[in-house]
Image (cartoon, rainbow, N blue to C red; front, side):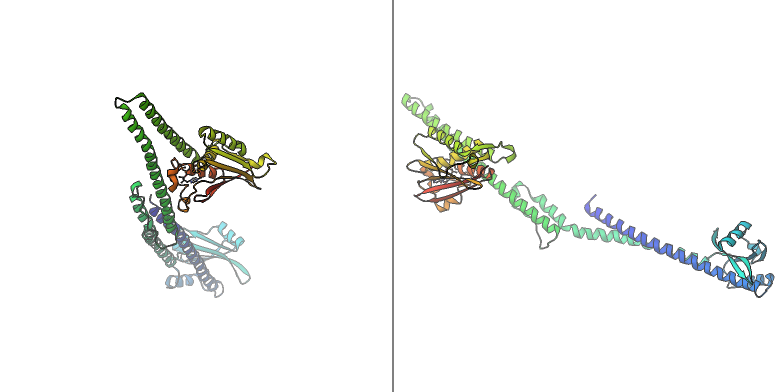
Length: 455
Ligand code: ADP
């Protein structure tokens, strides 16, 4: 069932219930009023007759004659007067005696003083009438033809009105809910047009400030994010393929040369060395990509434990010096460490080592003297690590982009790389709730500052 139909039916049902309660109240209040006023009329007629009979001593036969010829009397009226011992003193029309008074009935009237009953379609009243020091029981019954007909008319009018009002409400509800839900239908039509290849399309946000406008704005924001991440993904894949293509093309070229006959052993050795170098670069790149994927994981998926950063830095230095004999890494403690906790963090040892390796490696490879310094300090909450070098520095234009995956600065010719080291480092530090900042001057040097919350 559509929301539109659901809304309309709900609205109609609500209105119908209210109207039903209202109509029922009107009908029953009218019915009660009619009943009461008719009992009053019956009582008046009966009192008049009882007065004529008992007070004016009009003969019952005369009274009956008056009754027969009276135009004012109520339809099928029957007035009877008894004494309290159930002796009939007067009865209007003996031939239409439809209310059969019984001894029990008379006794009840004497006890209750007044009784209202319905005898088939007749409305009857019986009451105790005190006259001339004696009690009499007077009964009066008749059919309220006019009142009942009016009540029936009211019933029909209410029923017709009820059905008409419900029909109108349903139609109006259906129409207005269509109007109200029109923007939703437009959104649905537009959304159907949006596919992965048309992520630039947007929903009309209108000028309203209602929930639907809010939905459209939220949806558009989500599309912005999706488009950006699709674009970033596309860019990432094309960068990877580009980075992989270059060394692969070199390897193929070198192998083609090797495949040609007539090479000396020395030439083969040189070619093998070149191929090995390219293959190592490929391994380094794929390792970097793998680390990048790991650092992009959900934090919950990575094992965290207590790590002493000075020890980790010493390990990192040892590994780097082993792989690059020309490098020099100087680790200095700016403050005396009174407690282990001040330089210990909760982190992933492997990922932190990757981050520090990148920073130290960059410092060495972008400096003539291949020297890099790591200064360790701490304050109340954080451990502070400064990775500095006196190398070629980064231009202000490049600083804004160095954390973008695959971005290499204008100084890239100075050293080899793939441009994923810093984006990976940034992700790792972020994953550890830390911060990474850089200050650099061209031809003077660069300092990367890492702050990590200590234990
Ligand atoms: P890669 O080192 O592989 O080029 P990175 O992501 O580690 O990639 O660094 C991105 C860029 O930032 C480098 O290409 C370089 O231009 C610049 N850069 C990073 N560290 C330094 C540094 N210590 N000195 C000079 N330039 C740096």
